[in-house]
Image (cartoon, rainbow, N blue to C red; front, side):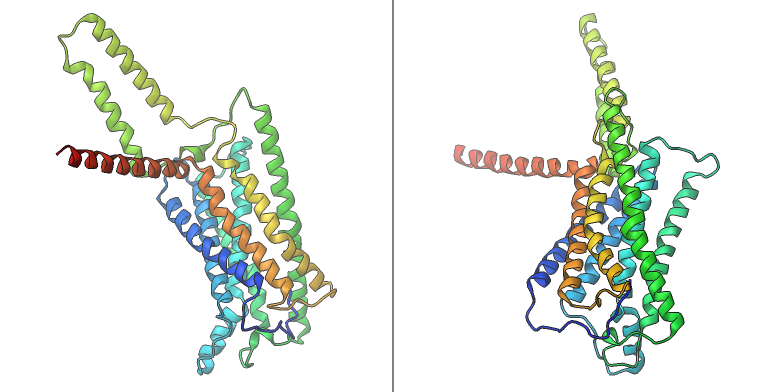
Length: 375
């Protein structure tokens, strides 16, 4: 992230159209990401590798929308009157270090999640040495360390002693300038070219694999994710059905045959339910719309950083171009919870549960009204 912030954009008292769009998107993103993050932490899965990476991605989107919302509502550079507190706020907030840290964390967590799903869905299980726990630890360390390194150069631009340190000129130290420019080109290369190209290749390979596997479907482990309470319901239901034949021992042989057939079919359904749901478009296919949202949200920002680092134009905070870039990123983070919610079967089933509960309440009220009228 390369900034020449010697002159920030003007601060207006009234919000612009882009500000209103960003506030609306961030408000929706906060609620949606909070809901999906809570649901992801409630879900359980046999292999938790992909599920934990999704939790990191959703939590990063939630933190990004909260930080971006705070910036949009005017929390820019508060003046507390304390020299040390103001310097700390300038270092950790006004330089937009949390903003870019969460931005990098979203990009890295999405990339490693796509790679993890590709290794499972495309059956590239070339891990003879590493275990699942070791791979997950490596993924998480890479996400957090790379995110911190990606946002660390922003701290080199701090001017704690100035009144508006966010709009202070760049330091004149040649070493710092070299690091900032090198960091700008590397971040553009990584987020604007390498990650999108690899994710597009993986999505293309997954689509081709799905087309070829119409007869032999691919097993998706994310489809096996469940809520702990809902997992215990089928067991009780099957136990009652299987216990019925032993109760009525004096029935006729024909009735016993019918009950045996029913118990066998119930056992077959139970075995099928315990297996993963096999169909063409599974939960891991969420990497396709997630990649599209990632490219749409980061392309404009990467182009801005590249042109700014090349000296074509000056990157200004609160400028229309910078606000449009933030709005695009807010749109992509608002789409992430929707994509995850409608791709994971356990989350998607909550819609039908809610509809059924509403219908039961309505029918219960109707029966109560009929009972009152009959009296």
